[in-house]
Every structure is written in structure tokens, then in C-alpha cells.
Length: 200
Ligand SMILES: Nc1ncnc2c1ncn2[C@@H]1O[C@H](COP(=O)(O)OP(=O)(O)O)[C@@H](O)[C@H]1O
Ligand SMILES: [Mg+2]
Image (cartoon, rainbow, N blue to C red; front, side):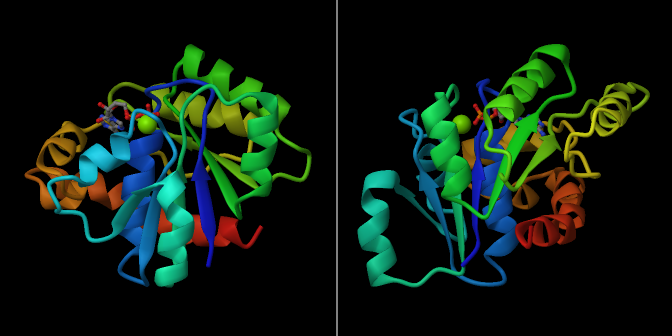
């Protein structure tokens, strides 16, 4: 039962979006649970219309739900600004910690700070999120810079598409909305890398 956690010091970097998309990706392989540990309950809001093909529950409900049902994948969505103790707990409490960041200075600075507070043996990856479309080169440049600095970055970034906001509004996975198939391709192509990363 792999556990993937999403975390970042900064808000609005795509943690919840990534949690829901990763769950949408893995739920076809087995029962998947998203644990919403953010007091904003964004993942829960996304799930409320009932169109997500997996369950989302609050962190305080999770233990009982996991006793009643068995899950193949657990995805843990968390609030921004964890303190050092929480970062350590998060890293210890999962098989893979994913830190999304858009390819901009503020996001990357926050990611770098988180990298410093992670335990040395943490299994973690940076996920470039909200990558603007060509001809803008932000995504490519950030990817090269992160790799050059030795950060463990997924080689596939997630592009910026309006479909993500529509998916929240409609309460469905992104591939279910108009224009969402092309956005979804980023996740299907990321899947293998995520599975490899879980192995450590
Ligand atoms: N790849 C993307 N393309 C377009 N909008 C995105 C993308 N990823 C996230 N968003 C939007 O950015 C906002 C913040 O994303 P969210 O996942 O809620 O971030 P966090 O959980 O880190 O606060 C949301 O409105 C979301 O719909
Ligand atoms: Mg969130």
C-alpha cells in the first residue's frame, strides 16, 4: 500500500490538484484514498459533487475508514507551511513525498527551503507544476536549473491548463472536462516515474 504525500511551504503550488490527479491516475489499479489534511478542505470540496472515482476523507476519519476498507494507494494532501517537526513526520510517514512548485523564483525558493528541512534519507521528488505553454521557456529553464543543482526533479512537468479549474468546479477528474485530455497526458506520462520513485 504505497503512501504518497504532497507538501510545500508555499500555498497555491498545486498540492491538492496533484493529489487528486495522482489518485485519478492510480485508482484504476486499485482502491485509492485521498486523505485531506488541509483545514481548507480543498480536496474534499473537489470531491463533493460525487464525480471522483475514489474516496476523499478528512484526516481524522482516515483511521476508521482504513479499518473498514482496504486501499491499494493512499494519497495525503496537506496544508502549506508545515513546521520542521511536521516536515520530518511527513517525510517519515510516506513512501514518497512530492513537492510541487511552479517554475518561478518564489516557488523554487520555497521548495529549496523545504529541501533543507527534509531528513537526509527522505524519499522525495520535485514536481514542476503549472508550467506555462511554449513559446515560454520557464518550464524547460527551471527543469535544467533544478537538475543542475542536484534536486530530485521528475523529468515530466505538469502544464498549465484551464481544464484544472473546470475539473474542480464540476467535481470530476481533469480528463473528464472539455479540453482536459491533453492536460491528463502529463499525468499518464508521469505515472511510470512515480511508481519508480515509490520504490526509492
Ligand atoms: N496545472 C495547472 N494548470 C492550471 N491551473 C492549475 C494547475 N495546477 C493547479 N492549478 C490551479 O491553481 C490553484 C492552486 O492549486 P492547488 O492545487 O489548490 O494548490 P495548493 O493545494 O498547493 O494550495 C487552483 O485554482 C488550481 O485549480
Ligand atoms: Mg491545497
